[in-house]
Image 1 (cartoon, one colour):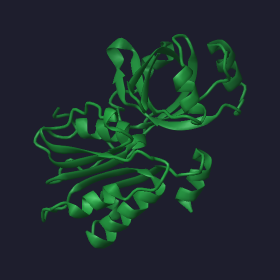
Image 2 (cartoon, helix red, strand yellow):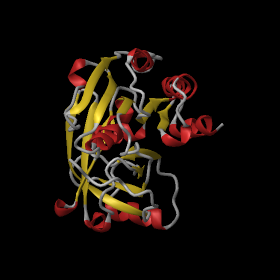
Image 3 (cartoon, helix red, strand yellow):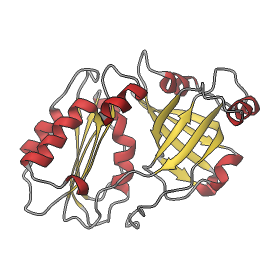
Length: 265
């Protein structure tokens, strides 16, 4: 568990065409797709929690056809941002977890239908900012979309880390195993209408007893909920925005490209 802190360096990025090895339902709202193939052999190690760009091929497209299309500059394939949940170089396997629901977008639809032998384009990886491992204590907040990144960050904390992690999920059956240090208390909050606004995480943060020491902070999820948490952390708790990781991963009613514009406006 006592792993070295992730270096804040840029990783080599390239487009890979990977093959679906298997697809597993982790919880009612989470599907894990395990990827492999020869293009994965030079994937950088130690990227758990970092982001990748998935390029979704049209149904029935072969690996060779999709590779040719991408090499010829075809940019029609939908692109979506996801997290490296696990990477097992010895087995040449990469796990990507998808939040799944009715009426989902192209990545959700692809993950639900994925069969061994299907292909997908993968760009990256790219780094995200993890909490300062030298912090005296830690606080995490994540909805379903951010659990893969938050869980990877928790698993990378020092063994003696203490603090709280609060995960907002759709139902009790969405609770999953997270291998956090023993000193991290994990709390599961049920929000059974995930496409409506929620202040449960903010209310939880406000109810916490905050030690005097500055915490390491990881907060990610829906745009509006994250905005409320950011305001609380910066204005009421007086934290330095440069020392915390707070990021919106999606916004209700918007697709990823629209969310990116809203996030940067």
